[in-house]
Length: 490
Image (cartoon, rainbow, N blue to C red; front, side, top):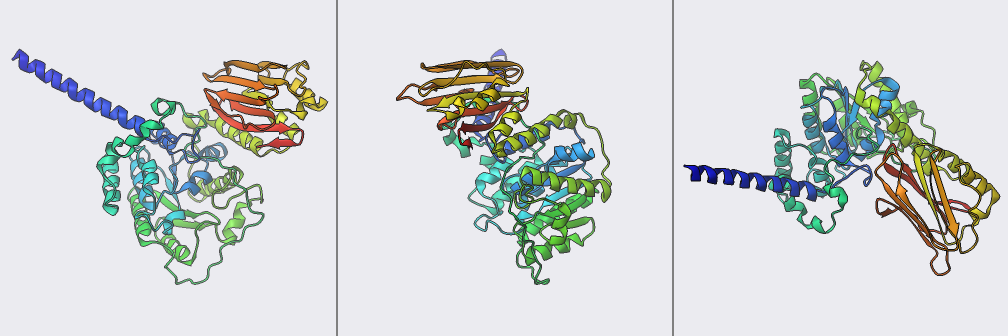
């Protein structure tokens, strides 16, 4: 009897260790898409969604990367007090949008769901669900195991027999070869993401000088929209109708728009509980009041265009749809992230050295600099005056062949070294766990530099003063430039 009990305990322990090991291996091998390493950071997006308090969100955004770059939940909260979340992802077809809507309704009770329509067209006819297998997994892998995920996986693999249902649960089957390319980030299961913007991700795409609006032609054409995609849009409509949610369809200016899509989505907009806003049309686009070229609202909107678009939607949501303002601690906490993101974007687009140096005057920026080759800029009196504003003295003049390094945090700590010998500074960035190492070799034959943060070299390695800017609030590098006598280089 005792022997049988002992064997049972051993078996239970063995199975437990096996399951635990498989879970760990699967999580480690899954590719990670964080705010720090991806333009569409779906891992961070969906992980933050699961961290939200239940029933804390009144508006949900769904759709492709156009949605990810176009809707800013924090701006909606800051300006209108409306809580929202952006569940968009790269190449998210309506099939994937539908299942993420079902998943979201397990935790949230939104009043309005806004779906961005880019994938109403068959943009990728080579894929059964209009989305490639890697990007399907990028969207679905972060979804928690549930009946919703089981249904999603079964549906997708039913459309595409080349995919295996089991590989969506035991992801080591799909990603077993990744062990050769894993980084420290793969093992950081509890990594704190920076710039948590509730699913939004900013981009700085150039805006056109003018927008050429879509002009409807054949009002009877229905050939442009894909029937399978529309089937899942109807499923989202029905799901919203069952839950008393207002369903809204939005087309961004300049996206895949044609008569067929416009007519099909317009017909859906005539149905009960569905509204359609086609901003490809001039009369709707003009309502955004976007000032080109800076405020790009077309295709993938840049951050300034996204503010315009989000503010317009805020007016609709608070007026037309009666979404009332509310106070939520998670949105209050993240207010600084959007402010700092906007400032960092201004920095990234700055072309004037003096203006740029003024933007660096921020007590939460750590600024690291090192000379590569020879820098005329450091021999300029006005340049030295700018550096002295950060607390650096004037003993670091730079002659041909000198090494020069600087590590400073405005109004906190400033260090600078220069000389004929190689120069180096190492330390920890204030208020963070980040370790920096800055090196400069000015001697003939080795005119190079290095600016590392946590072992990653962010220097651009061009002749001049290489500068890396680290935001201690967002815990990430926000810019990397080179300053020369001719100005800024990226």
